[in-house]
Image 1 (cartoon, helix red, strand yellow):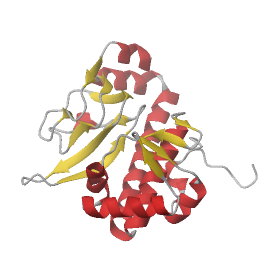
Image 2 (image 1 turned 120 degrees about the vertical axis):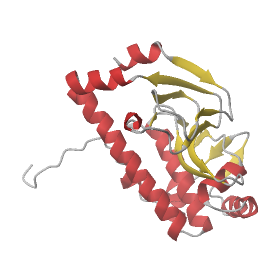
Image 3 (image 1 turned 90 degrees about the vertical axis):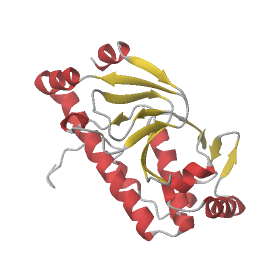
Image 4 (image 1 turned 180 degrees about the horizontal axis):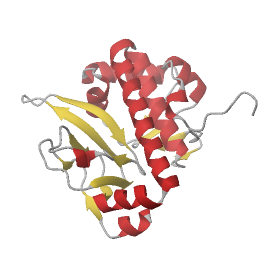
Length: 225
């Protein structure tokens, strides 16, 4: 069913282009079919904070229909193929497809968990921990969808993107990446991230992947089961 709706409404958005802007009236929910995108807020003087990153398969703002206007913007990092899902899709899911509806609710809860972890990242982790944690999250999320090869994955983020996602200056980002490289925790080349030892990087970033709920099973089990 998702394919039926998506196939009718897929469009390509160039890199570094807004899919939707703060103040827009929401019309459709965006599903990232291919490419990387991000949610952000921007001040009048141009300072920008990246609030979350969208990878292939992610749905942007499932419940956007309840808003009168967008309170944030969604932009692309790479060229993106995006499916625009109408309200009718979600109404039909709610009415007749309880397992799909449950999966969509699961994704909403996981997205909220990711946002909480990003808040912790910005508020409590130091620069090295902050950067390592973000890299771990991206690698694990890509791994969950089969988008890693051995210990490598695509990595189109610039140092400016990383600065806006971690609350660091670009100079501090550069210095932090150099430290991670010097300790053989990562390598970055040709828009590819190499993680020689994911467990070491996780320890450096104080990264516990439980908030990603990789098992995709929200059922609670009794001790007797």
